[in-house]
Length: 127
Image (cartoon, rainbow, N blue to C red):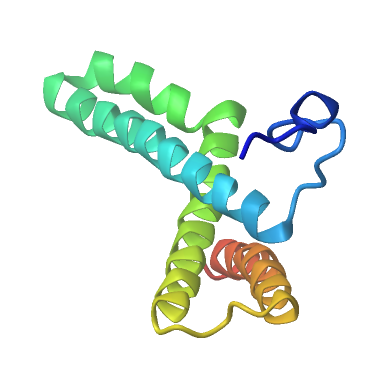
């Protein structure tokens, strides 16, 4: 049977009426941190290659890595590692068939974000 109301309602949630959920935002952030970690890995590999090419080229790469921008990238990468790790643990927990209730999923999302920040700060303080 044809849907007579088809023209009066949107076919899918639109950005103006859709409210992002904690789990969807953290899922998107997991993908973004994964891509950011690849880019940070390329920067670190460039640093290692520069060390093998010679002192002049290494000085350039080391200058970039140890600059304020390089420190910011490395700090962000450290947070991304912890975030990605904790999000992976959350997914393993979900794979066991648990944690899908809305309240528990929301707590897990907060736990991943807050836990990654705490672990990042602790790692910076220890190192």
